[in-house]
Image (cartoon, rainbow, N blue to C red):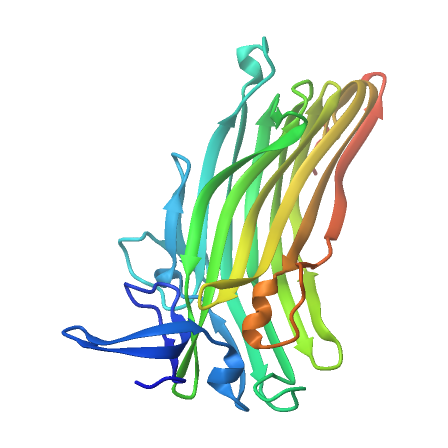
Length: 360
């Protein structure tokens, strides 16, 4: 061990995020090994003019999960939704599924029949995208191109029922229900590049306590969030999604508004330095004017109008800690921009009662 050496370590019990450091002083040897002082190092110092390009699935069995709400259940899934519990067989590749169900506050004085609840699941098969090309940089040790992003498949199904009254001083009420962490390693020759992935799954509800709903939708598709770097353009945000809704159901009673999301906050970094933050938030919302009752089966009893929507908000930022790539440093986070998509689930209006449509 000598001054100037670069230490690159995969995760260990003493360094769960891995280590990337440069030796600045050798203090001597002890019974435990050589003692040194270090300073942060960059990928340029570690990889030089090497080239790396990989997409690594996150092994579900290597993900640590911390339930935050009573009733949260964790399982692994593979093709066909065959699931194994944490004490069962470890699937080398597949999806991690988290089921949750919780009650939500109702308006003060609301009857017992107005009790509100949200329940559902999120199933993720995340992948880490990492690339680095040490050739063509503007300075020795800086890359000509690089990228860091989180991608994968997303499936969720959930429903919101009752007459929810959930807000805090005009802001939506957010309830985190599980924290997930993983540190997959991408091997670049003999060098371990440690990517840190953290996800916090949450329920978020913003409701006025007046409208009663029974809405449900399933979502399925892919997503990618992160950043790409080239010498000519610098860091460019990446923000894409192919999520779409299936099997929607909506029933809305009375007047008011409600919006509820079942989403995940994600962070992605290298050797413990967070480089990308993102918020993936599929949601349901409903609104009604006047005194309206309606459902997707065609029944209605109303003197007003109601609508129900599904949607997706995907937002985030590239952080200054991306300087670990040894690219030009920016002084503040670069927004990823907001990807916003919304689709109508159902709507209705009327002044008389209409029976449900018979299915042929």
